[in-house]
Amino acid sequence: MPEVPEKFNTAMTTWQEWQDAPWGRLRYAIAEANLARHLDGLGGGPLRILDVAGGDGGDAMRLASRGHHVTIVDYAPAMLAAATERASAAGLTELITCVRADVTALPADLADGEFDVVLCHNLLQYVDDVPGTLATVLAPLKRGGLFSVMAINRHSAALNVAVREMDPAAALAALGTDRLRTQMFDSTLTLHTAEEIIPLLQSLGCLDVRHYGIRSFCDYITDDARKYDPAFYADLEQLELAASARPPYMHTARLFQLTAWNGTHEARP
Image 1 (cartoon, rainbow, N blue to C red):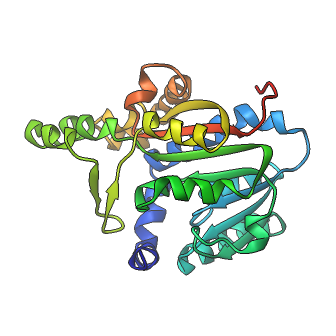
Image 2 (cartoon, one colour):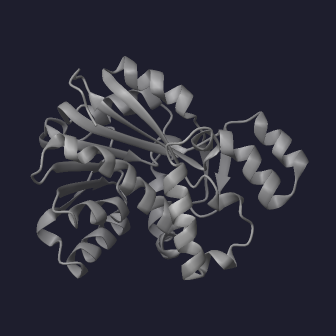
């Protein structure tokens, strides 16, 4: 959809404000913690990481600050410009590479890149062909490498509407649809569940799939102003981290994150 990159370009200010808000900070902090559970299984040295649809580098900057080399692929020039700027400001220029490309047609050097880790965070809700997209973004991952996919959790949609908007009729309607309209990027999203994506990953050769939830509580606490209090936020972050891999909380979290190993039967942490 060619209009999507332009919408990302024009919504940059709103997007960056969202990232700085408590819910945005939680999204990145919890995703990083979930990845950290597994990165040691790839050895102690710097890793080569491909961040597909990586935007302005929210995930990439955290991983580069750990010493890893991250290639960000995105189709929106404003996002990549912001990522380059962030890398420079953080002194991470040598560890961050930005490539403008369509994720469905990666350049050959990336498609055959044999990366240690591939991230596919918040892309699936924008694409029509989910199995094909997953196959494409898995192709650059070396055997035994770590894959991470994240998307908005459809199970959270009705609960989110009922709690935050106090609109049971709208919540009832949300139970019967997989569509969600986002004001930030003026787009209609397709919502998925972890239970739908896990078999797709397994059919593509992924093993030991782990299911995590991101923002299991934050989005259902209606006092958003209080989340800006540092002490409250610190307690909330600890709660979210503790619940990330604990059932039943990840099943109704606002986002789901799945990690998996690419075609290896070796024991992994």
